[in-house]
Length: 390
View 1 (spheres, rainbow, N blue to C red):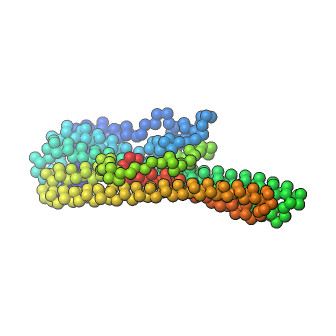
View 2: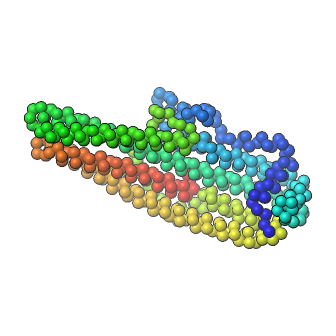
View 3: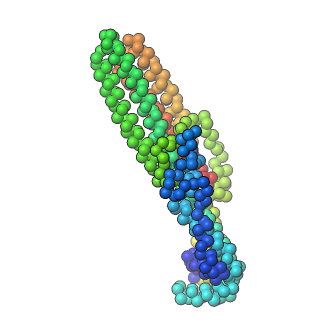
């Protein structure tokens, strides 16, 4: 029978208590993320980044840093990693006193009979090292998840702010058109029906702007929840000004997969588990070989899943890049069509319906470009996450 992973951790804890006494119990407190220059966890985390009068922008890098500092789940993973680190450091010193104690514990709790001579100083030290390596891998996995969630929320916030700006620009354009139509109706060169249409369009855009502003507040709140602290009301994200010409995606898919094998924390954790199972097979009375085969199978499945995730993310990023190129071209064409429609209306050879139709098309094209840019940012993040870089 093999020794369960939970039992291995308990053995390391026993070693810690025997070797280091109660003084080591306070060690996990040192694992809390550093808070140099930061406010208390309950205070707005953006104070240091956004309060100076010179800028009210929260950069993406700062948002990710705040998420790593304040996210509760990541702080817990850091504490667990520090506990495993302390156990690894204390394990060799506690090994001579651990063997008889461990044998009695295994017999009482699990009905296992393991020769005390099998639990050597080297074996205990290796198990503590594997436990620590696994805790490190779990922390890195949690860190990636937190960063991915923060980046997704940040991009949604950027998209919401860009949508608000586009709606405000459309509203300002319609307000200008309203003034022009009012003047034209006053001199008899435009029909009152045109004025009614402009007023209706203006009311619709005011409602759309109110909805966009509400979405922006929701996106701001969502990012604050991921980070772990609320954002100041006057803080804004970096502009969503991504252009297709600025993006250079890697062409070599095989090179990305090779890099992922070295960098992905889940693959590292699976490899550590495999090494741990191989070492445990020397301690268990039976079932050790089967546990080793199972761990090898788990590592193989993790590697296959990583390959599939990288391939999907790479293809999705390339598709999003092509979509952004098409959306940017559509925006250029829509803006030119609106310019010509306004010129035709001013010259008296087009109706207000044509102008409004062109204006709506331009706004729709800009919304499509914003969405495509946000999608590309997310796809690039997913690719980086799949490779193990983020």
